[in-house]
Length: 421
Ligand code: UD1
Image 1 (tube, rainbow, N blue to C red):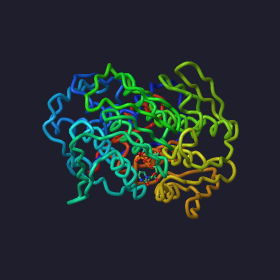
Image 2: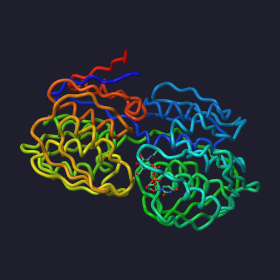
Image 3: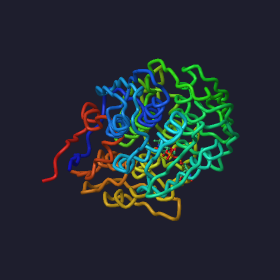
Image 4: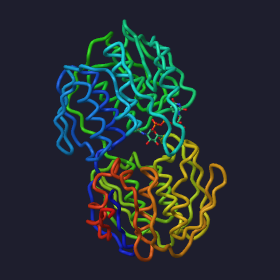
């Protein structure tokens, strides 16, 4: 198993290019199942989660040529509609094949993803929505078995809670359904918007893209034909590097970003004293003279993203004063707290709120990554800790950060990937 050895204390400088968004690429890859024609995806991030979902396509009978950031995919000859445990257990987002497989083939089986480190993460809202579109669903042997022999029909779906994956599954299902689907309380994250735009680029009428109400006209079972799709920049990767600059009191430039998608993170970093030069596709961050504490609550887009909570906590750890961080989306997304405290942070947890008292110094130690974003928070803290920090179990980081150590090294960080002996 690999780990990262980080020697803290270096300032960062220079520029890096942000990769395509993992969370946009995953539903896009799932949506290719709606087509029986070859298509190309570009600007894919070179991360494990993408390779896992592409492997699932090949297991279903799809043909995939994948070269780092580009994939040529042809799903004209799908032989199986079963997404097996071996893949789904590696990555929850595999549940995104449920909607497209069911709407195109009238049946499918997808392994239940189960809980994960950050919480229970049920899929009840996905299933309830597909049932209201005419699917018969049973759960047996750890699998969701869904059937709609004559295809799905349009329906009015009111989500009790805003769900990114649930909205994506229904948008894909609706694209080939009979009639009109109306989604109320839909997610409007940029990744959902890109999926809707991809579906619209195949000639499907979608109203309300980027709002909480979507109306989709289905093709009555006719597969879709997509142009080449370029994945949007990863706002979470970009936000993580902005936090790396903030915590190390450095100035860096990020290229190939969409600053509009990063508004919540930029606003919070501004309130902490950082400043920004924002151009068309690049952002330069300048450090705070004195890093101020921050109060934040995670909520759906355009609010502050839960996927940035851990990284901001790492920055708050060395701010001058006390920060309050409330996690509203996932019940167990504070596992980085005890690891940050091992580095010398002073964080107290009460329910879904963390009180972070800024400290002047962190000290290197061995720490363990527990989930994707928690892992990046440990890397950020290690960048300023005195001495050496070893971040273990970095397979979590490899799932979602494209060449993290390469990009940080090019900015001047002392970070090396090593193998456990
Ligand atoms: C996606 C992102 C993840 C991000 C999350 C919230 C991907 C691949 N992952 O996850 O990085 O942290 O959005 O922005 O895009 N819920 C239910 N029932 C359901 C579905 C969800 O109760 O059927 C709950 C979840 O437990 C959670 C909340 O709804 O509390 C939001 O989850 P959801 O938006 O569905 O997250 P994901 O799509 O899994």
